[in-house]
Image (tube, rainbow, N blue to C red):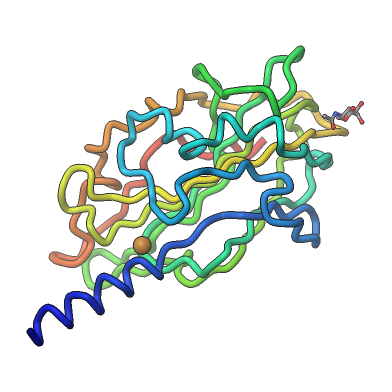
Length: 231
Ligand SMILES: *[C@@H]1O[C@H](CO)[C@@H](O)[C@H](O)[C@H]1NC(C)=O
Ligand SMILES: [Cu+2]
């Protein structure tokens, strides 16, 4: 009786710890929830199947593109995401981008193909085995700079926070994902890469996705996916 009450309390805490990336930040402006971020139908659940199409922009996000606006931002400017709740699980934070084909609006694009490159990472910090800390812990928003050599055009911007508390078994890592739509102006002649497909970027067996973060304390953290393109 006492044990089940404790379990229920623990489960309730787990559920309320879920968080969603709801708003795009442009410069110093936090835009309205789902103004430029595709709304998903996965209300309070993470994605756990890295091979699922839902792994790209979350469940239901392909259908919500046309009803989502596209934000115009300059290459080299600051963008980011705000959440509906603080990041409540330990893990890394990544941002990937993909450029829509020239004749296709970002709002009508599905992001298919080997088109995604990583633009931002916030990795766990290790010190050889005595501690592991998570700079993304507790954040309610974050920002980063777009490279100024990023070519002009319309892009999907995909944020991914990987919760690692249950990652010691295959499929136990939880992915909190949203995609925003942006229109980059004043761009440059950079050649973003390496490019990967999503899904397809991860197998789920990566040392940064399938690991026990508690014991023994990891000596290093190996970021999954491609290296960051800095322009
Ligand atoms: C993107 O920006 C260009 C250049 O300002 C503009 O012509 C175009 O209409 C914009 N497209 C969208 C979808 O905002
Ligand atoms: Cu959770």
